[in-house]
Length: 176
Image (cartoon, rainbow, N blue to C red; front, side, top):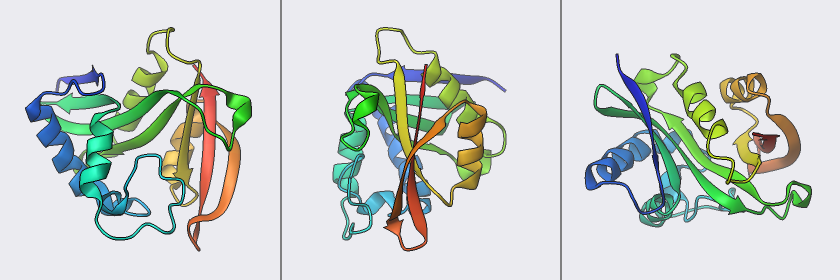
């Protein structure tokens, strides 16, 4: 099985890649808290209060970020979107960083190390990009947190009940 990871600069995806990405985002949207289809932004600060349908704004913003597209047998199986030269006011000590806004693997393709491949590709991007990588995930995403630990990401901040009463936001980071 051939696996490749394509790095697409903001606004540089083909129409076919955009349609494939939109389909995958819709497939996994409800796995996120709040669902991706209710978010207005990929860096939305107040997650608990998201409501209504803003999937078009979310997806439009996603297209204006860097994206790693994981392709197997000509089908998009996963993606990782990120912002370069991002600054997070909650973590001023990090300075300018790469911010991972979304990562997901198609449910049928999980458990084969594809998310690890996406992060490894991110870690190997050119040195001209910021040294620090920052991301947030929810406290209930145990598999994701375990993966990040094995990749050397360190806990930087916990925001209690940020996503809902049962889930905190966990900020993690590492140098490339």
